[in-house]
Image (cartoon, rainbow, N blue to C red; front, side, top):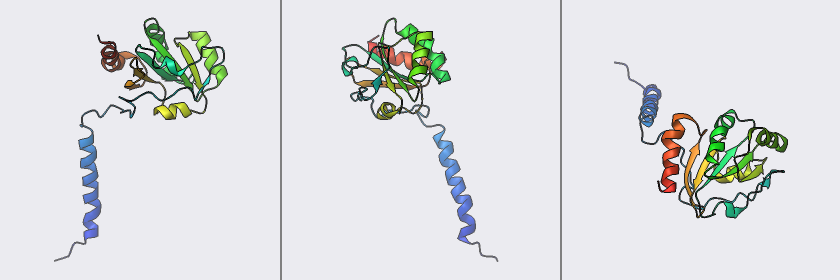
Length: 179
């Protein structure tokens, strides 16, 4: 009778273990959520970014103004950012929105807001992406909901459009507003 080497059993056992782990991970609760380490904490400063020339600057007091505030990280080269822009213009009619343009050029960002409309109370310009890193932004667009004291209540990764906006973002915004 031939003896089976443990080295022959190890690769299939490792494969089966990893396959089981991945399979179980697909069904875990909250698998589609990107957690933010800032939820429940004071929002990081935005003042490290410079102001976008020709637009109102962002000051730290804008984040803790006594009202619910949205902070949107965007770029002119980002197609999902362009897709959500009409929704931002609509939200700006009733909410304070701070914009942080990152990894972009000042000329492209200014041109975009001039041509398509500016939904932001203040616009910060973060060409190196340092402020985005401080906020834990992975890719544009990302929107944060802050309470009146500047505490991060919710982080939404992706464009504010469609059923994802209606089913995930709006309930969190309404909760923040006490609706």
